[in-house]
Length: 422
Image (cartoon, rainbow, N blue to C red; front, top):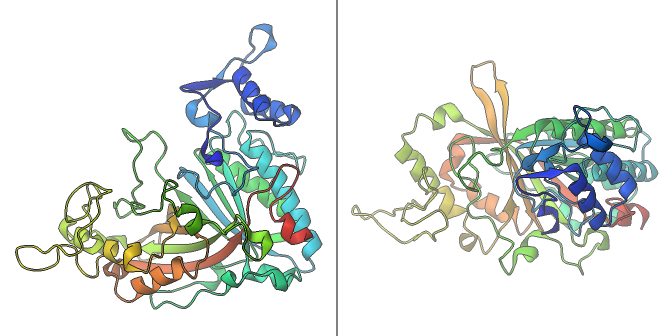
């Protein structure tokens, strides 16, 4: 998909070749050229006055901002992430929100190209010497945004509040919000640079409601591309819909003929801060953990055999006559064919926020799932998990949010423009 294609060579990309790539993609040479000079700032002189130092393959990876679907949805998992919710300040309405989204979109486009943030004219220089590093920035609207901006008639029915679940222990101060921003990158400084720039852009219009910081395994850390592991040590994301699936777009993105019109080609993000009770989990032997999940910890294969991608045999029984994959195993309960076909694209980050007063790690999963409608994606699966998932004993949902994420912005436009100027 467009946002997944890196503007990078293997193993490295020179300044000259990156300029050539920028020109070939039709981007404004002035903006990209300035950005490349910034991103590839040489440590010393070069013959003929041209910088010849090359970015590593990691630093040269680039995602596109002006695409059909916003970046950060189907983009492969990134090593570092920030999730931030904002509330509009008192007195800020539709006009101010439009100005903010215009600034944010400009900043995101600059930074994703490896250029300095130009919108405010005061780039911090945090990411000096770095390339784009696969940076993505994604914007969404919470339910409360529409009342604050007088756009209630444009609020999608899919933004109706999520139902209560018995496993919820939600902190209202760390849930929901008028606006939501997801930042992801393969370099921590590049991700923080984007976070800081967007926070500065929001000054006077919106204030931070909550912020969560996450991470994943770094690209290249394994012998080959592998499904990531969560902090329980389990492979996480095996059953995700894949772009090659015939119904992938139908499950993940809002149809092009849907209503409201401004959400066409967009998606809905459910965000949950899920704390893992790691001390309790780690007391289980590996065999016990595998019974809870329904998969081998080492390979991610179902307990009935095969590889990570093998179909589990849900009817298989052992010598004792019991089901090999227990009825309450997480892998059984979450299968689409056990939930009327409900599916969602999970794209999480792990988090660790230190040790609490009881000496217990405050760590777990920043769960993010994408679907064309949360009422047919997240909700039915979570309801079933709520009724008897063996994993529920070892996790706690502590924060929640639901956001409408419109389609990508065309060149010369900003994200959400059809809503705010329609």
